Picture 1: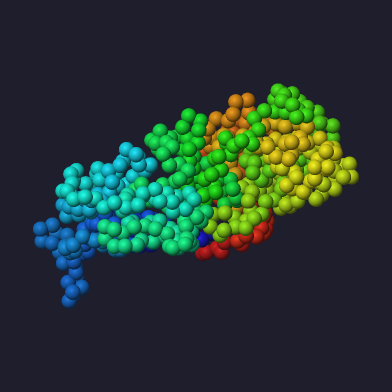
Picture 2: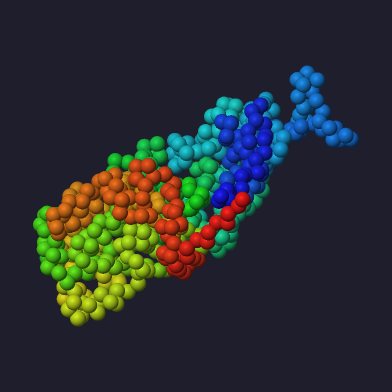
Length: 568
């Protein structure tokens, strides 16, 4: 039989009188969540090192009593159970890991008194500006002060005045009066972003967060410090004072800037996007996201957005554009350039279109310098989706040299480009002038200018679908805001094009389309969009054996997996 995974090394600990089994070494703060107990904290973060700065997570801790001479358990005569030796002073929960027999108390009188004292100390110099603070609604100090504070202050002296509206970098603004010195931002910059630029200066009540002399917080992950700041000290310059978070709707999405497939959350209200933040997925991006990926939402309202179908440069009806495009495609001598930025569903329909026309689709590769964090060398988010759906069978090239040669030789009369600027892929303006270009896209470029037929499409924020990242993990994204009036969903446009070619109408509904996907694509058999996990699922190894993947910053082929050794 096949060898089963080694079970986790579990230990039993006692939290507030309840036994719970957890993997050995689990942080006590995480273990307490399993029994519904909250250990409040500020400086602790599951993805950063432990420093024990804030002391908010103080708990009582004890271990079973053992006779030092005989090593035998010491029993409590009153209860008949092994006696627990409680440490007389409180301990920090973030610095305590689960070990056999560990006992902790999270709500004893000593613990409550400690929390009240820590909260009172943190509020001594903290400004009472919750009504104008960007962190309101997400502030841990606000929440913990309500839940664990005394409800009154004994401090009557003047508060210390610290710098306000300090620009730490191009995207992050600091209000130092709100800082509680948790050091999360310092540790993130050093440990994750590898940009050790932040630190504290001065001492006591005058301690201040700042950048090292001559440096700024300007790495491409700087806004993660805003996400993990437990108070309103660090704020996003782009989002600052724009909207209260409790008015915003959250929509799960995917960062489309590279093949990593970072999970994100789109925050919108009444059809307007206000910010994009990371969504935790430990298998892909932990809790982080690049700054450049957060700014992609600006493409929705950008000045170069194209909103109306055109025929020979003149605005026309969508139906006329579809009919003209279909007539050109049916005339023959066609080339189809698909996109590594299209969803799996769009690529599937593109393949259906290519099959009906009897041609093979091409993709354009985008390769840049990866940062070895969350931006890969492969800047296309869904090349692997095109491989899985068999839209393409080999790695795409950065330049369409073969297509350019076919245009010059007169073998291609019509080019259908789905979201790709052909001039960026190596075709010249003179070559585009020799053919009829059908362009499906969302923003103005040289190809849209040269197109005989242009049909507008949606951005990733205005539609739903799936992509396959560099791990061959299938992940879905959802529509966050409505598309512009008159602009059809990409699936509708492609479905209508297929129908105009041979009359066979393919459904543009995601649920129905996935029935066809699961039936025709071996790697996706048994899947459906509706039941796909929020954090995605890694495709079976048989689906990606011998298909290209990213290793470091190099595109390679994935070898077939070695067979698992059998055991008796």
